[in-house]
Image 1 (tube, one colour):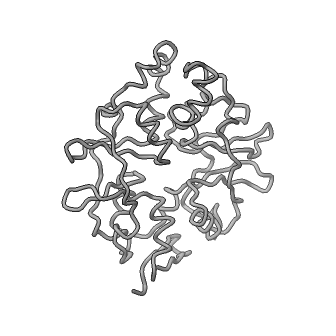
Image 2: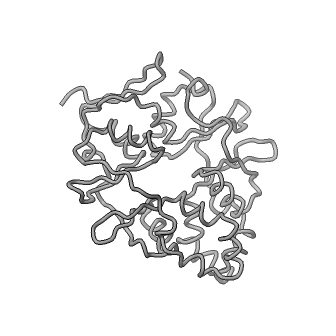
Image 3: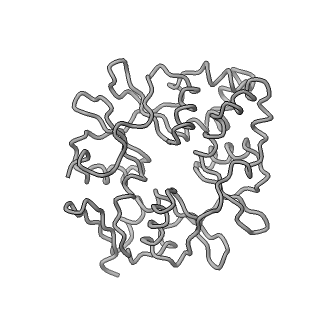
Length: 299
């Protein structure tokens, strides 16, 4: 079964930008289209790079912020966004051809832990994009006989609802995470994702403030950006149940709990990269139904 035959992916991608674009162009494309990856193309429309939301957050509040925005622009975020080329945060793009076998796509994403793959034609022109969420959407609604706690990420990084946007970006950059649950007195109050951050910063009001008062934007309490309510799953639940929650709510992660206490986070990437490695689990591709079946067949 070929990539182009699958009911997944985005053809064409919601956002594609010229290689000569600025970081501002990328921020606007991601924030307003609610995407985490943007392919970059040359004058002929051929794939020449990729940029991720993580790269933008690094630029706005992580290591690149200190190296570029502070050192070269004296902390003037707005000017840096417009003046700096996207080349500074782009990377060599992983890709597949539109007639590639779907198994190749899945294997590539699992083995390399990729968040997205550009899809190109024989001339290397960008025709689509396949992300973790697109692959997860193919998982059949079946019990996997694997518990959430077996593949979740147990190290949970949280923040206070009153922590600032600047703190959030710094933590996301340093810890290499895309989601930050908000907790107060042991209770979940919301969750801030990298998409929430970029959507907020790409608003006209935020950009206008950045021109003259960066601190007014960067000191925004996270409670004003957070998604609520937070969707949770018990750590003893089947991974199949967790995946159904993700698909139902259109989200990429669940906060894992035990008796109301946070014990971990389960992300799309955890499912994609860890489920196939659980002892006894086999992954089947049902070409007739165009579904992926993952289940533990031996214990």
